[in-house]
Length: 77
Image (tube, rainbow, N blue to C red):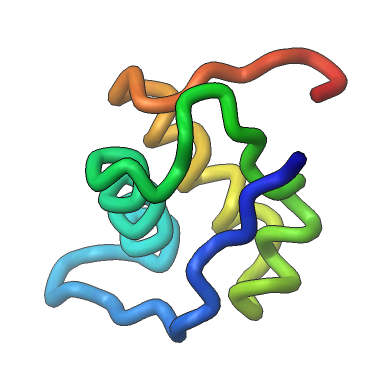
C-alpha cells in the first residue's frame, strides 16, 4: 500500500526550495511514526499531483530523503 503525502500546501522557508520543504514534511512524518517502516511513498508523478508541484521537485525531495538515510530506493517499486 502506498502512503499518501500530507495534502497541506507546502510553505517555503526563507532560503529553501519546494523540494526541501517536501523532504522536510516527509521526514517529519517518518520521525513521528506517521509513515510506518516499509511504507511506500507515492510515485513521483502521484506526489507531484498531490502537491501541485513538478515531478522534478518530488525527485529532489526523494533524493534528499535518501541521502539522509530516511528512505531507500527500490527499482520498480
